[in-house]
Image 1 (cartoon, rainbow, N blue to C red):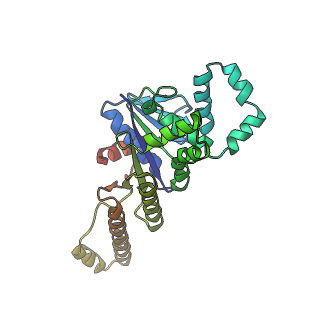
Image 2: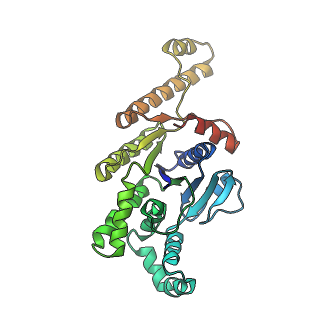
Length: 290
């Protein structure tokens, strides 16, 4: 059976990595063998989970739950070695200055390699991933659009041959809701919500994908108008100012929720969790995720 693939993105600073980790914890606790993947050159989860290292090969955090760090270069290397089987040939052809420079500047090649690895199971092509769920902590919204567009872009450039065929097969899997799900994490603030709306519309228009929105750090303890009036009548000036600011914050959060629900009526909200214990934070968020 092919793994479910979950892509998590969002504007930088909205907590997408924490939400991705909470989703992974939820899946792992349900008994599913889960891999949490981060994309990039440096690992956030290394320090987050107090691990000695995180690399391309999965590192176990706890039962049913592992993490890995993928780069375009590491994914491309693994795929080529899988095809040619001889590491000496790989090093001779690919690990030289000319090829490294080509790989770094080739349009969409690193992104294509990452998406190719993520979808290798459903496509039955490339090294197998022995997991039931793969949760990918993706690039922020702007770069995520380039990640999604890599297979289409390569297929348009390479019309025939294996690379064109594989690019089209990757694109088909990414659009298949039976295999891939997409989450956009945002904060109840103007700029993150605006970027979320733009990416939501782009995914729907360009790929026929309807992502799910997660509104993070949402104010879940709303006060009534009568409570605000009573607080603002208090003789303590600092308390009155606090009440005024909280009224404004509550109003903004409700307005932002209304906006994102205009795109996704099933928008999930997650609270601010006041704890320095990583696993405690993740378990609280995991319990709220559907």
